[in-house]
Length: 145
Image (cartoon, rainbow, N blue to C red; front, side):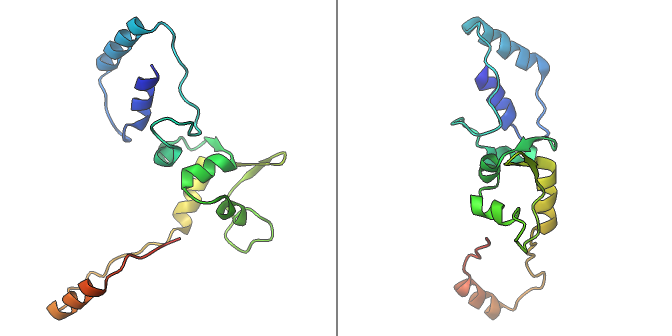
């Protein structure tokens, strides 16, 4: 059952699957094992689909702790704490407190990321052939933190 649940969770958004196909697989699985396992928790616990790959498909009201948000965004803990501290002059990452624990609502974090991302657009002008050759010789990957 867990294999089927993981496969469904990893499917791209908008994937359509026939109900009879899923029912057929569930019946086949049920014959192999009468025990039905619960789906995995949101945090990555060694399964095949890390939270980083699933973050943008999570429901907006999903709540994450610091450890889960670190995994979901692929950022260090310090990146999160710098954006939640009262002394920081960086744009504040939306969060709530549950006692001493920071809690993040996925929809609010997605909105924050969209509002604070830097868009880089390639020029739309055509370069002369000599400039193209020079550009190709000196192009280096751009690192964005």
